[in-house]
Image (cartoon, rainbow, N blue to C red; front, top):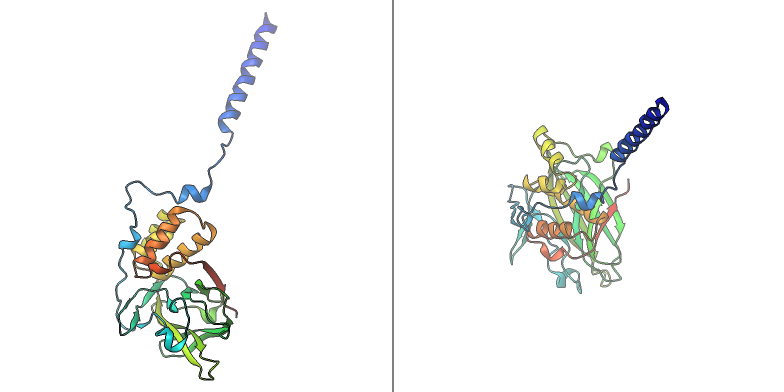
Length: 266
């Protein structure tokens, strides 16, 4: 009798171990990127497109590269700084933008240039027109949105609450021996990362661009969203948000073109 009881106790113990192991066995996790970018049904569509990035005051820059026919003929579109601004028949202004990054990424739309035009130049200056960074580079052979990332060193680091101007220019009409600079330039200032902003960012991670955009921190919003699109190119929510963010500043025409990054050299 004692042997039967021991056997029953042993069987119960085995069942208990099996049940505990089953409960603790990790289930297959869904793809993180898909889960994390799902949206609440209560969120309105194209909410980013309804945001405003107003003129933050002086200084202003040049958002589009001017008359294509006069400077660089046969372009599919204008060289354009992907920043807030306003366009008129007379000029295209770029507005001062914000970032939280020491080494931000500067985004432009780069049209396809004639075969004779092969190089461009990126430069970053302080408020007194002193060069912080300047580098010539070979142009890609196709049009698209391109982000120029500053080298990660102390010399190029943006200081908080200081204004900087950045340029991208291309020399055209070289065949006629009359080179003319086709360029855009814009202003940027770095703001401090506050505890309140950090808390907001954590609540929207990895879509920090939502928090950045709602706080009008343009460069950080655009860069975060561009990086997510580069790693999750076909996810509908990111496509919609990319389109909405560009539409919010009147640049929706560039929402469907390829995106690429360019790491600037030391």
